[in-house]
Image (tube, rainbow, N blue to C red; front, side):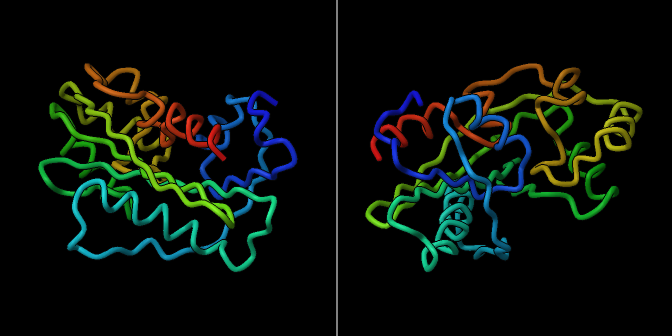
Length: 193
């Protein structure tokens, strides 16, 4: 294991996201996947990064009563901001089309909040990446939604999918943050546990 400070610890990724699971395995850390159902509601008073941070912490807090001394739990939540509005996961196909049409030709911000928690420590962090899409055609949007079914993705898209390949013109910040996990920050914090 690359992070020797984690020897004897059980690192738990509390995420159903196959992207987060794939990404954390790339860090060379053995993880156990364990999830709990948590209502992803939040106050409309929260601003920008506060939403992703709040939801990541809320998901982590759901593990507190069962947490063992040798465990570190990692949770995450990703939000997409466009012109001050949050684009979360789409409710259905029509909502996915609506979101992608809004993102077409625009720059938006992807914010991922992460919470790392053990019995002795809690860290809540976030990362932001600005993403610019070129103008997307209706044909591209419909193809993407029909083939890739982005209903589990904030903003209705994955940067690692077709729409990211053909649509993203510019990006400022971490690509992995857009995928849902700012690995550089997660790794740095895990090194401190």
